[in-house]
Length: 123
Image (cartoon, rainbow, N blue to C red; front, top):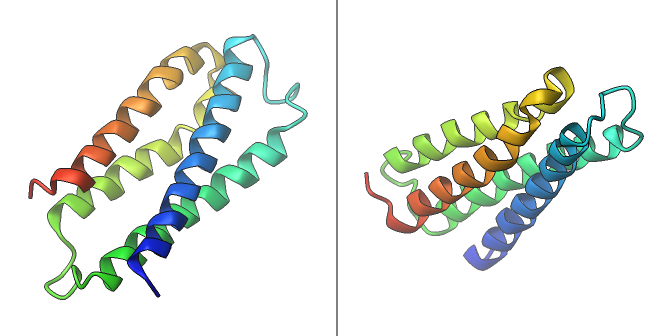
């Protein structure tokens, strides 16, 4: 499959994750709780599918471009750590709604860091 298809899958996953996380964070910022969120199932399902697409698209792209021939690059491990952190952010608005505003700002910052790593491949 073309590397461009994998990139598209990766970006689709990114959009799904950040849309879902933004919705959950905004719900928490507005004083909503886990029990009062009628769209919680939809947002968590979209979030999980988005994370899966990010993983599949990213590693598919690495394989399609031959970047995995010498093992997983260091910057990829850093991106995995960032995405594990972003994955864990899903629980914050449900467990500690008062931290939702922090999620609102931290998630995009982590996304920018992940994009920078992918673009510059510093290590």
